[in-house]
Image 1 (cartoon, rainbow, N blue to C red):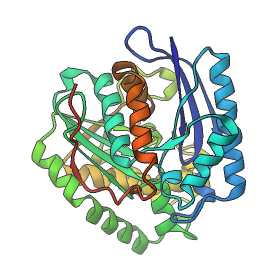
Image 2 (cartoon, rainbow, N blue to C red):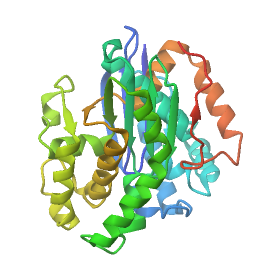
Image 3 (cartoon, rainbow, N blue to C red):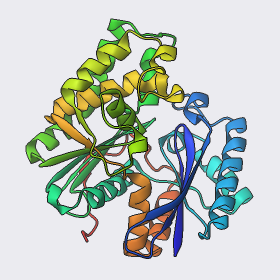
Length: 339
């Protein structure tokens, strides 16, 4: 049996087609379409019509590709850049009506829960009590747990793209004053979640997302071509030096550094500041860069709990026009049953 996932992120639309018969999602094909939605959508503003057109085309092509690889209709979701847009429902409706794909958005809490599941499965039970950090374009997800699903999660408006637009717009590189203002915002938003992580005292800490992968490579981790089974670590001390390096360079020159891609070079500095501040406040000296994250969590939950969970969770949240976007979801314990 083959299952596919379509992930509409801040930069790309990504497709993963995986064999799921053996109890683990083993990818057989991946593809991506670069849309750079975060560069076209101002935080709090609607998704422009032209961007919606390109999104519809990308999801349609992803669906056709999944069919060619023998998978059923994709489990399709959009993250913070669409979730936070005031015309979210119109965007989702356009995709559904023109592609027959039921694209949905998930609350940041649910994204964190699924990302935690993916990381837990990758790291295994030997990792013990586990803390998770995930930096996206629009939000930062934080989670902690001892079991299959997390004991608590938080989704905060601290995405690398969002903060770059808010604090560094028109500054390349930014001034020391804007850097200090950014750190103050991150410390304020993270205070409660960081205190919970410190209190729990996790045995293992993992970081997911392209932001952490690129920062890891910048700080000396093995390149992606070495495969997913090479252990990659990122230390708070190395991050501090990476920030000093990134802060004096314009975005075009950051793109020449190891691991920093041109599409993400502008937001790499804000991402590094979020990562460093989060690790400092939570007391995490090192994190393991985990290759499994949200997409794998969706596949695992589908595999382990059956297709009904996806239908239930998407129906529940998409029938609520006022569902809270990232940053407005309160920090709370997850009340779902543990597996």
